[in-house]
Image (cartoon, rainbow, N blue to C red; front, side):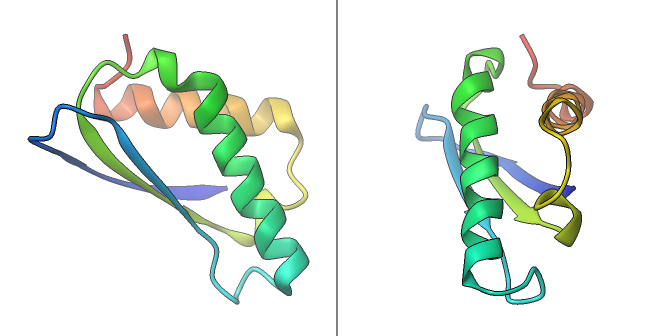
Length: 85
C-alpha cells in the first residue's frame, strides 16, 4: 500500500512526510491517499521510539484498501525497521 523510506536524524524529533504522485490518480485520490497515511501516522506515532525522518510514498492500492489492512501494514513496516516500542 505504501513504500517507507527512513533515515535516523540528529534533531531528536520524529519527522514525517506523505507523498502521492499523479500515478495514484486525480487530485481527489491523491488527497485521499495522503489523508489516510497522515491518519495512520497520527494514530500510531506513540509506537515509534526514535528520532527518525520517515517518508511514506503511496501506491494506487492505498485509496481502496480497507482500514484494518492499512493499519496492520503500517505497524508491520515500523516493526521491520526496528523503531517499534
